[in-house]
Length: 113
Length: 115
Image (cartoon, rainbow over all chains, first blue to last red; front, side, top):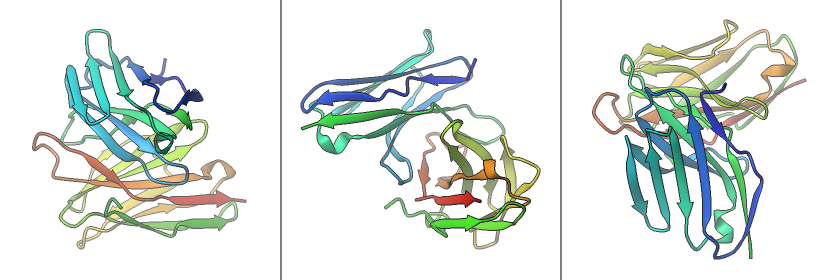
């Protein structure tokens, strides 16, 4: 079993739809949870950062973490064609001062105008 | 633009060869992480340096090595290259680890093709 599981999609939605992306994980030591967005041939860009369980909202984006279920989600409201990208969940635990990230494989999202 | 720079952008080489990838972190960031991204494995952590010293190791092959210099730039050396080493290599820099929230900012990557 991989440490982080993420459905690779692809996911195709019409403009304006609500998008739900999620990951499950097996390592209960993970404490920090992130979502990165990666456009084709570009480096990952940090979207959301959450520590432990709970919700966090930033504009059209909402991140949720449920540590009891080992499940994290990213919601995108009023999706735009510019949101078309691959979304990567990532998580880390603190160990000897390293915050190395463990990534899901990413979900490819297409928002159709 | 994340502020992290990587050179070269593209690299094409042959099996058995050795290459060096370079990364300059954001101004003030002491920590550099290297990741490899391939189609089948996704993004995987290779190695981390903090202020010139190795801090953590991930799934890094023995044929690969890295170092961080006094000016904080880092180099990833890949030797005895194999076809399977073809991938995108990213570096990321971060604020000082251990001070609460730490976020990693990724460079644009180096695309390596081994023929």
